[in-house]
Image (cartoon, rainbow, N blue to C red):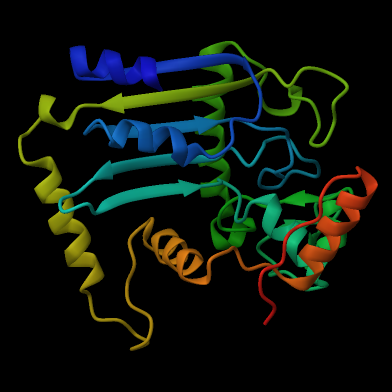
Length: 263
């Protein structure tokens, strides 16, 4: 992203590919680097195949996350960071640890049959694209995931789709591809930040169905949670998550999680 930022400042827009990469963490982190420079940032990556394309009986694409962000005015910002599956695999894993069922739009058991059992999804099954099944528009999420694959796998010359090593496998190099885009809005029409702010304020102020649930913009929930974490002085976890972490700590002989408060 730093290369893309430098190039965008020179010519207005830039796209940089990474080849032979690995898990790059949080997509939004790279986008925020561009945002701090007054640019629009876009970042995406392909990942190990765990998503079942529409009508497929086996996984062939990853969660293939994409993030895009830009600064408004007064310290406000727009930041979308999402997987192209209905949910990230981590949400299914949390449901498994809690012993909860998951919605039908989240994943499938081995062979592609829709499942609400987190254990089935995690062991041999996989995730559904955004929208879930075909009847509920899952083909759109599948299409979006394939766009990320084109930008990351094919454009960079890295592995793509089912050619990427399996999720949780370490038998070969990941060889993931990533794409980083930076756009200088001042190279286009002036006043971008003000228009973006007006856009965000307009949508936030729309009448809402539930008086206690206002319309949010991408990134708002994360800002609210960040504020909550600061107020609590720590990150809230489900007891089963702490139990799992403690078991891992014991297995690898490392310090256990420091629980500062129980609710």
